[in-house]
Image 1: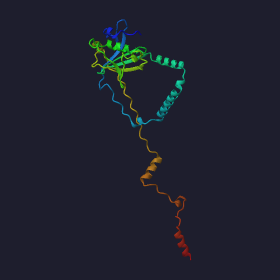
Image 2: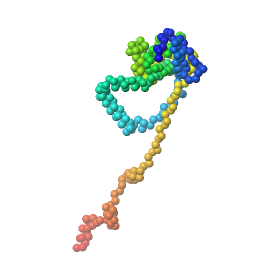
Image 3: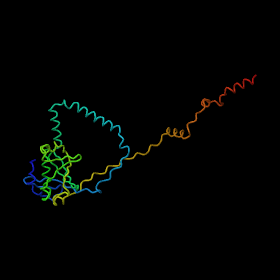
Length: 261
């Protein structure tokens, strides 16, 4: 993709309001590019957060195993990574670049209005600045602005050689990133603001099914009844053996022996 013209040479965008779908911005000498503009969200747009049970925060066996596998893979990567051949690393890097040929950039203004457009991942940050400036009003075009990310705050200045010479992929903005614009309210052209749509609201998370309380087992019930009665009463040994009369005590045996004499 050819680099866009400098911001000073960018004319006001020409929008195609009659066509459905994303809007288009026309720059001199370049084809129209599609983009979207979103209205500021309201409090009613966002669904209420789901209520999480205490079990949600308790790690399961699968969670522990997954975390252990991640730690083991990280340890292996740190140990074996330096031993990889340069050609192997280059092949892996090329595969990652080819996986994300485009980068979706959202520019958020302080009033929560957002511009969205997809750029080739090989573009540089000045392409994003040129697109944003082309959407601004004539009064706002000469004003210097800085696109940044937060938190933590990270300025993406065109004047920074560590930023301007890097592609969007090298700046770790691929496949999708959000930036902030430091001018409020959004100084966009009226023709662009007229095409603003509501930002898509993610569907509410389905509520987790609550399992019914477990009914006590017969063994647990009998154990509970014994505990409620103050403990189980022991059966005399003579009764377990089927004897009808209890065994005589040593005193009773002695008294009967004396009576015989």
